Image 1 (cartoon, rainbow, N blue to C red):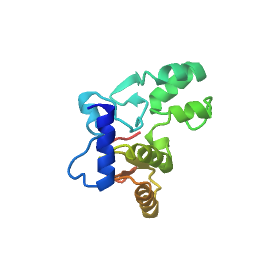
Image 2: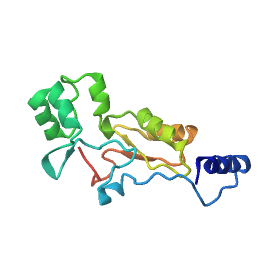
Image 3: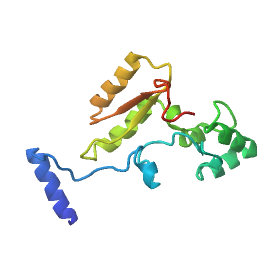
Image 4: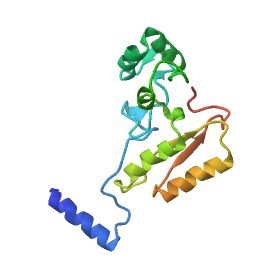
Length: 169
C-alpha cells in the first residue's frame, strides 16, 4: 500500500471505530518467543548482560563501554554478576544505558510500553519486573498506571514469587 492509502485507511478507522478482529500493526517477537528464534526481545530490556549458561559471555554492546569506563576489573565484575554493581566507576549515563530489567523502575517500564502502545493496534508484550519487597499495593499501582497510560496489557513479575524462578540474577 502507498502512504496515501495507509493514511486514508487510518482516517476511516479513526472516524468509525469499527475495526474488529483485525490490526494493521503488531509488535512481535516477545520476550518469550524471541529466544526461540534468536531474535531481539523487542522492547524488553535485557534481563542480564551475560548468559548464565556461558560464563564468559558478555553482551557485545556492553564490553566496549565497560572497558572504557572501568577496565578489566569492571568487566570481570559484570561478567560474574550479570549486571552493573550498585556503586562503582560508571556514571549515570552508562548506568542508564546498561540497566537490566530489574534495575529499571516500574515507571520506566510503563513509560516504555505506553510510548509504543499508542502506535500499535495489538497489545504490546511487556513485563514490569518488581523486587521481592513489592507489596500487593505496589502491584496494584502498576496495573492502575498501565491502564491509565492506555496500555492494552501488561505483565507484572515479582522476584521470588515462585519457588522456581523463570530467570534469576
